[in-house]
Amino acid sequence: MARVLNVAMERSSRTGRLKLGPIAFQNLIILSVLILVSTGMAVTSNKFLSLSNFSNIIVQASLVIITGSAVTLIIISGNLDLSVGGIMAMGGVVYALLSQAGVTTYPWAALLAVIIAGSAMGIINGLLVTKMKIPSFIATMSVMYITRGVAYIGAKGTTIVFGLPIDFSYLGNRMLGPIPLPIVYTIAILSIFMFIQSKTKLGKETFAIGSNPKAATLSGIQTGRVIVTLYILAGTLAAFSGVIFTARVGVGDCTIGSGFEFDVFTAVVLGGTNITGGKGSVIGMVLGALLLRVLTNGLNLVGIESYYQSIISGIVLVLAILLNKFITSRSSKAIEE
Image (tube, rainbow, N blue to C red; front, side):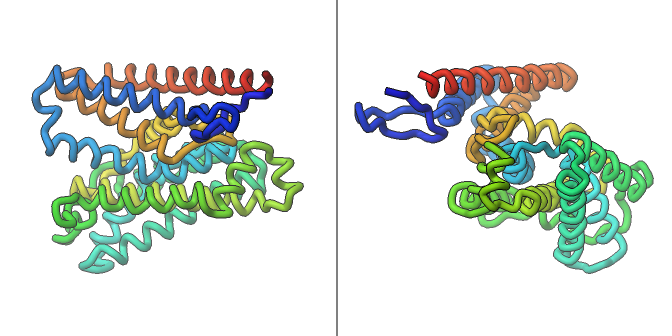
């Protein structure tokens, strides 16, 4: 009797026992590692368990989770998006320039303009991949350089400090009751994308495209439309993340988002998303993002220099890919039996 490891947990009809699919199994491993790392950091530093530090970790992870929610779906579709760091920088600088120019004394109009700009970059990404047939790695890397160049030109290679309105930092630093606004945004966006992944036509078509693009097209799925939609979502959220980061630091900085795309990619892969497409989980990406930020936070608390942290991040990415490959291989063998 064939044994199939499904993506989610399921009950075996023959034994009635609960079985873990490959993604659920990887998520369980990442959760276990997260708990172990957190325990180790708590023992090493007495500041780690403080409420303010936990809030700081979640706020730091929020931008990766917000952007990663859309990037997870892109990778599930069998594509990549390396432009999110550049779009993030462009979004932050455009927000600062518009605020400085007095577009409004309230930040929402500037935010809307940034979201439109991010969506436009997403459309360009999507069209390059679907219409021009440029590999997503090359297409989105090109857009990354373009958008980061726009950020440098807009900020003249420096930071935008003077002439910003009093409420410039509103979107990134205010609280909703006891909860920082970035966490509120994260919960709302994460909930939307969990719904998209599991309950909508877009989510189902994304998995179908990633599993077998030709079969998806033959079944009537408009693959180009789906992929462009996903890139629009990613561009929008990356630009929004740039606004949140810029509002938090209180200046427009053209250098923000450097390496952000790799943080997002690492979080997505850690969460069990297959880099070749067809399998993945938004909630898994959240676990990956939290693990990355707990590591960074803990290393900062114990005084590890940033260049050592870069080495550790690279090692974590390699291990995540190897883990994903190992679990996928075991799953394939189980299916063949």
